[in-house]
Length: 239
Image (cartoon, rainbow, N blue to C red; front, side):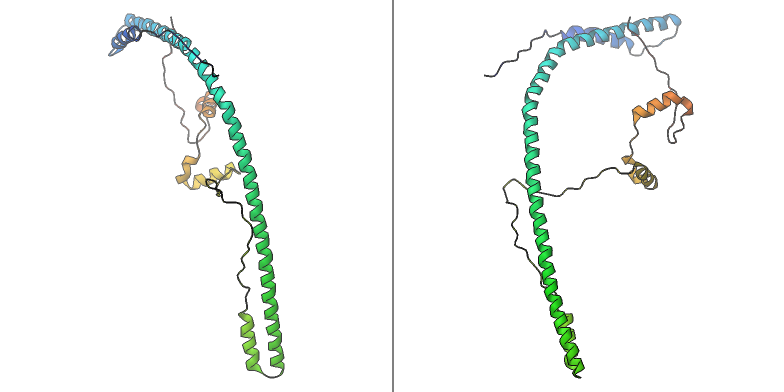
């Protein structure tokens, strides 16, 4: 029998939360700082806002944590059997694909064998006619010799068909060939893109690594194509 998961948390009063927030928002709109005292008051307001945001974030987390825990548990319960089914599907597909490939390999091997036999038969027939043409030429019958050579030149192997067993056709199951790729030479890719800018989107800048380089080297960053600039930001801490 399935067990019930019941999660109950108190619902915060939206009007109370939004009332204070909207009041602060309206006070901040169109703010003009024209004196040191006003600047200091703005700094106090900023600290107060940071503190309030922290309080709301903490409250939000405390209310969401039970739901997230229940959701994680529910996800885990379903994930385990789904992973097992997915793995089983992969195992069966791999076995079926191996069988299909082996059937095709045997068919190709039989085709090569039958084609070789047909080529051998045609070659012997040509050699036989060419020998007959040589004898006719020795006897002075040039017309017959020429006719035999022409006939010999026209002898080719007959088309071959291999009646080999194929993998069973099952409704809803099919095999297809897909194209995939792998990076084998990053430097070669970069050189190619440099010569073909229409493929520039293939090269994505690693923002995290670039940030580390800029922090370490500052204005002396040697990477071409990158502009290092300065921008002032305001930092604040809660009261």
